[in-house]
Image (cartoon, rainbow, N blue to C red; front, side, top):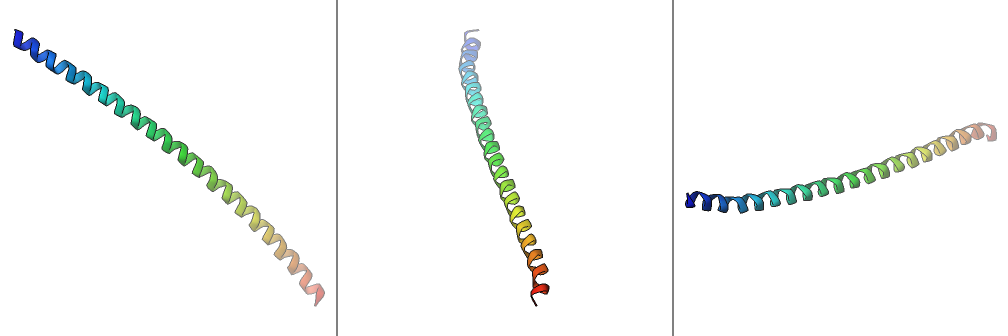
Amino acid sequence: MASKNESNANTSPTNASGDNAHAELTAQLEDLLNTLSNKFAGVSSEIFAKMDEMSRRLDNLEAQLAANKDKKPGSS
C-alpha cells in the first residue's frame, strides 16, 4: 500500500505542475490571440481609412477632369 501512495504522491505534483503549465500556456495563447486580433483590427481600420481617402481623391480628380473637359471646347 505504501508504494501505491508514493506513486500517487509522485503523480499528483506532476499533474499539478502539468495543469499549471497548461493554464499558463493557455493564458499566453489567449494573450497572443487578443494582441493579434487588436493588430488586425487596427490594420483593417487603417486600410478602410486609406480606401476612403483614395476614393475622395478619385472623386476630386473626376470632377476636375469633367470641369476641364467642359472648359476645353469653349476655349478652342
